[in-house]
Length: 302
Image 1 (cartoon, rainbow, N blue to C red):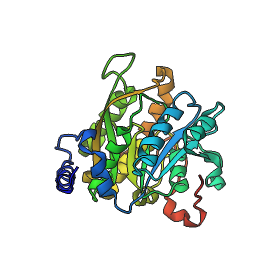
Image 2 (image 1 turned 135 degrees about the vertical axis):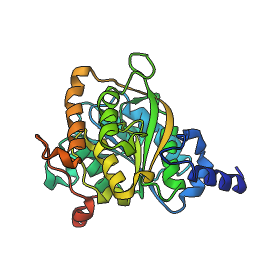
Image 3 (image 1 turned 90 degrees about the vertical axis):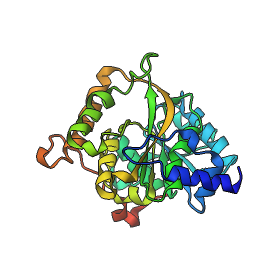
């Protein structure tokens, strides 16, 4: 790709975001564009994992081989192991990731309480200027999950958070996945935060955030984390600072309906706790504080 073509692509994608704009496709961000836009910035890919030995190695291998060793787009790759009892840590390390035991990061906060706590500690354990989070249970994983999410982060300086959109199947039926998203998250956003009604996948585990933004925010410690970060970034930086990118199809392990009740409760709690008219929320867990308040405690572990 010539320098003129790269400049043209950068200009095009930098103007492709906003609540009324079509969602850009991951193919709008080819590697030469991202490498040209990256400059001196560094990128960390962080993968929270708990008993994901069946899939974590393949996810790590793609990032390591194609985006670190071959291109240098990604500078750091960490798997945050949350007390796995299988061979998740072993397989991740063998595939080329740095493996961090989550409970060793900021240990004064005790054992990690849930996914949000793991993500919070991943910010402390990593060093990249941009952080990309990926779920460890992804099947048929391809590099465009990372390149697509990095596109807005590297090409548009006003973007603070990039969320993925994708088709989520259930039992082979397209569009039938994401049950908590479709039955709870999107309806409650539409009712209470209509300015974010255009966000298609508010709960998906694949998204990217600027380090300075992540360090300035408190984190929900459980499955409320995605909703909490979405609402807080919108409140602090504006809706226009949130981008979306279409990553195609997402294939992962679907959980049984009975396992989604508690996840739904945590998501709803995160929303209601940010709704002034809702008052106190029963069963709220302690938030993890902004990491900017813990500078002396920061741990970088690989």
